[in-house]
Length: 213
Image (spheres, helix red, strand yellow):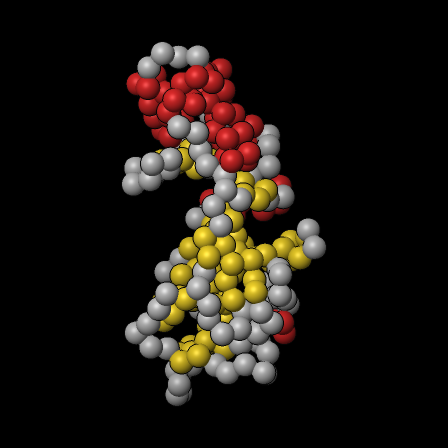
């Protein structure tokens, strides 16, 4: 069962959701204070602390507006989950990943469990992964993680650029490399510049979530 929250705590959760959905950013203290009709920032801090204690929200102290709603929060609100749309990455030769501020997308109810992990969305540009069912213009759901298995489809950073490829780990040379799923493209060998940032766990195609091949 969802944690019990007070009316003020639930109202604050609604305020956070509405601001993120409409602007792409969580509200400021001033905005939360105004919508809650309380006089001090400390009252807002106390409400946020209670929501965080109950694992309804997560705060990032390093960010000015570092608030995120956790799965339990969406359950309490009975509203679609939100995940950040971070930018565009390339399925082809690596290109710079472009941050897209202020754009958020909703996830369907059957994807709520994925929000237990740190996830974000990226739009694909290019055709190097077409044989894995990832086409130009698709949106992929990426899970931040540090460990990867052979044949995972991954988001890799190469210097200041990023790309989506299949991670290959074999017991013969070249041992570790990134494999495109289009024979028109060459494999990418691992160097010190190659850093795996996340695993592709779902593909959004024409409004429908698809599994990763």
